Image (cartoon, rainbow, N blue to C red; front, side, top):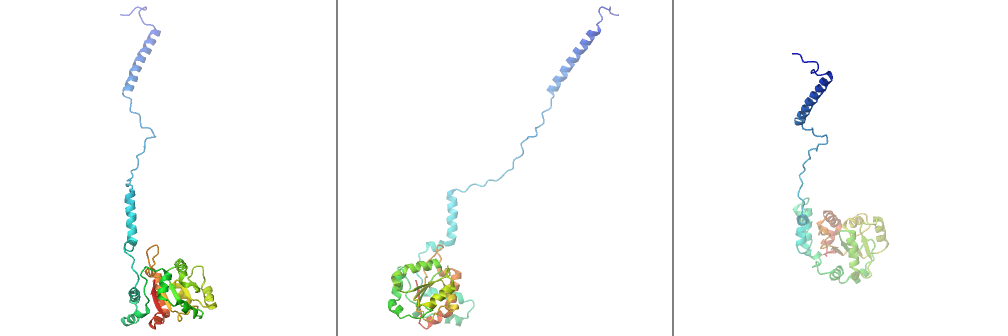
Length: 276
């Protein structure tokens, strides 16, 4: 049956219904979208994975002091703990044999033995330098007055460095008196200057290093024949607790100097050796 015209919906009402139905359908889709909305993607500023580092435990003060002490002991442990012993003629004789044993025959080594009579009394560690020199040379004043030969000295004192030589010169004031002392080391003094001083006047005492004394003898600036006393600064130790004969360079220069006429003078008993 056809509706009467009055009951049929107008075109405007049909449009409104269509829009209404469209709005309702759209609301349903929006709700569905809200329900099924995907999880937002991570932003570009996402945290980067951190690198892992193994952190070593820090040493405590006690541990660090222990390691330092141990390192010190490796260097001078025996010398620091041991009581100082005075040098003896046997110590020098042994060093001479050990030094020449690799390139000398048995017969030649026996010839290097020095007679006991050429050794003076060794320092027992109770003496100052002045008191020790007075003991081994009680007639020094008379001896130096008769010495007039140039390019020579009556007494040589061997030590390890220029600084130590200056210390020895200052400490022998009570012994030297009016004696003329010659500084025989390389620091701030040229060989030619020392040669001129030795040629200019007679010197009584020479204090220096074996290297410079050897060079002066080699160049003819110092004559060892008038020498009466050769004293080694044997027992003194430096900051590393080393004696002069413990240092390889000094030991080598000492033995080279001994071969330049000292050993023959000792065997003829015209030269005496002392260990201070």
